Image (tube, rainbow, N blue to C red):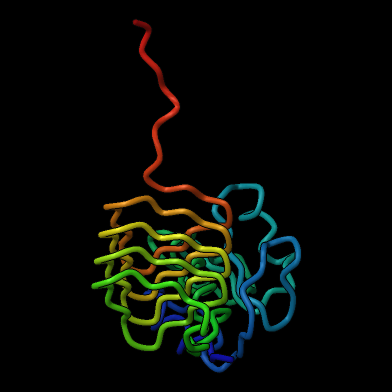
Length: 185
């Protein structure tokens, strides 16, 4: 829960409206209601600002004819994405390391890891701080997984791959496999 003045500061927007109004969620334009922040970028939404029940609407420039609280940002979509992160992300809570983790020789686990059952990590890999590895993840030799990364269930990461910080890899993904192309011989 944030006041509009707090949210404006956090997302880098200029507030036109009530600085003490409170928002608790970020929602799409069509479903936004009291306590919500939304955004409007195209003409179809910009002409309907006063129809929205949202507490605040993120826009690119001031619209003098509206009664709505506005958060003016150079990139409304980026500002809305920041609002989503601020209002909807949960603080990281490490779940610890499963007892059945298979860990290769020379591999280093970062601090506060959350490693679920049935995970295999090869040799000489480096797993960053606050990394979450869900069930069934297989990580090859000499791989690097950056801090604050989440690897969902049943992901395979082949040898020598490097994954950056704050990455989300969705279930069933294979990273480092052969491409789909072929060459006629």
